[in-house]
Image (cartoon, rainbow, N blue to C red; front, side, top):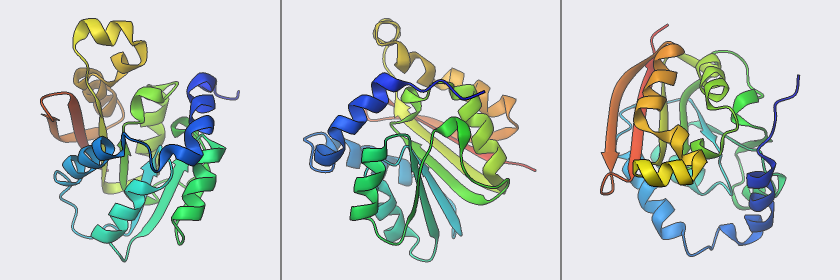
Length: 197
């Protein structure tokens, strides 16, 4: 059975893909990515995956941190992936959803997702896929907006990125929580897990 795609979000991403790289929000996205990287303690991952890679901006930062690592980006928007391929040579890109990653079991050392988790149609399945492709002792980092209770109920897809829900999903898929922190005046939740076996 094919996964139900969050077509509204994907259509918006298609429309934004050409202008996304230079959008007025990139200063905030850059700050979020820096805050996320500050918590990653892996010394030298060999293969890194960015889930919801957009135009590849974060992958370019990851290349600066780990120039010898092989980089992979996935995004459900063909337009975003097209721009990512243009702007980020030397990286493998796939048009794919988090819930169906086109990668082999236990093939990735470090998986990151910044500000895309709330767009996932089925976050439980996405975390299951991440656990499947993650190597033993590999790290996964989910960083997403955390809105106050009332606001997250109005903007429904931010409800799934609440730290307690992310923690539960990690634990259910056998990912040990290394840290879970709130940053940027508590509006950013970052959860880091490790695959124990």
